[in-house]
Amino acid sequence: MNSISPMPSLTIRLRAVVKHYGDIRAVDGLDLDVPEGTCVGLLGPNGAGKSTTMKMLTAQAIADSGELEVLGYTLPRDSKQSRAEMGVTPQLDNLDTTLTVEQNLLVFTYLYRLPRSERKPAIERALQIANLTDRRDAKVEALSGGMRRRLLIARALVHRPRLLLLDEPTVGLDPQVRQELWALIDALRTEGTSILMSTHYIEEAARLADTVTIMSHGKAVAHGKPNELVVKHAGREVLEVYGPPARLAEVEAGAAAGGLRTRRTGTSVALLGVENRNGDLPAGERRATTLEDVFVLLTGEEVR
Amino acid sequence: MSDVDRRSELARTEGRNPQPSRRRHARVGRLDWAGLQGVLIREIVNFSSYWRGTTFSSTMEPTVYLLAFGFGFGSLVSQVAGYDYVDFVGTGTVATAVLFSSAFPAMFGTFVKATFQHTYDAILAAPVDAEELVTAEALWMAARAGTYGCIPLLVAIAFGLDARPDMLVVPPIAFLAGFGWACFGIMIAGFMKSIDNFNYVVSGVLTPMFLTAGTFFPLSGLPEWAQVLGNFNPLHHCVELVRHASFGWDPGADLLHLLALLVFAFVTWRVAAYAMQRKLVT
Picture 1 (cartoon, each protein chain N blue to C red):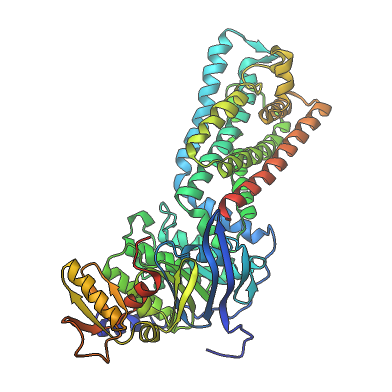
Picture 2 (cartoon, chains in turn purple, blue; picture 1 turned 135 degrees about the vertical axis):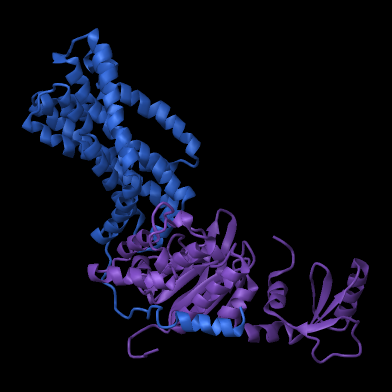
């Protein structure tokens, strides 16, 4: 990164942001930072406030209170200016399906106000990013789900934004396509684009994000590098104990008495932070702690 | 994906991704041309994929009306309000064509793009405001109404209506009326929660207005209260202006008709912008 230009060091800065919908506090005092040149994962269960947060960053939802800055601009007042300098890939595919790949990109070179001379090169570049150069004349309705997703990302990049918002970038895609998109997102970050990515796929956040903010009930409940979050909140090792429900309850009680934190999965109890414990533990399988353990620990196990 | 695959994937993608742009972008303003242009271009590009069907229906409909009413009804009444009935209907159906190519696509198209296709989410994530979105969409539909609105007149000319130079004001009149009706349609789409509610507007507002605009029979034959109500029907003002452009002006009355259309267009424009802002920005 060159450090000559007078850039803010944070591309996104939210402080104590609150947003109600009727009686529901969708976002409830959220603090969130996206340092320049990094990928921040916004992780949380459904209903945690991720989508509302994303909408506030494009001023499609207006916060009730709190401070919002994007690329140094104050929202919602200067939102239009900040939108000119960032790209957004929505969760729902809203490509124009009766248009061709190239036509979809062309429209966005106008929406993002590219000068005439830059439109054609921008379209070529976006076609390369989406790896759709040889499908440029195909109608979008003829593309596979993965191709459409790639086009949706490339469409947000026609104007070479400094910041990219990715809302659930791989939702509903099969594993091969997901990995292909991960490579694309990773390459973007490597090249210096700041990224805020909301996701409820834990592996996605663990792999792509430099730092992760975990949201629950509209608040940030944890923030940090994925590995450090894991160690801080759930230790290094987990002991997974399987058994019938009565046995699992017994194990949970024993662990609580022994000062260990536990997490129920569907079929087992996971004892967290067991790396320094040996003899006094029940029989089970040891494994490394994952971000998922932290996620469940912090956001609650009940399905909401 | 193995690490090797991942690296080769990265190698393949490296160097072709955009360097984030360092230039400061030009200041954006309220209701600026670049914002309108983006939305207009989207409509124009889309139009290239469906213009045949639209043009067909916009040509067929007035022709059918003209043939059915002009010749069917015209065989019973050869003259209405001093004009040949074919000429009377031919000039009147300009307003019908305007309505059909603005209010209806505005209502249904706007609702579909806002609610089902999420098109407007994509546009508003770009540097475009709801006000620009509404204005550009209405301008686009007004341009279509200005074009398709002339077709009934051309058909009538083909059937014997005398062409006059004054008829050159018909496209701008149809554009103005089309802008108002497009904004009306966008406004309805903005306020309505469900597309089913459109039935109330179509049956309760548009159909009565369409039939009492003076298109098929002069309002002078109606009871006085209906004639007074006619002054609040924008279609009626459009019909009168087109007819006077075709048969001869009535300057005082025509200025008022023009003023009525201007007020209609302005009010519906502002309300439509408000309604869509409310719908799209929460």
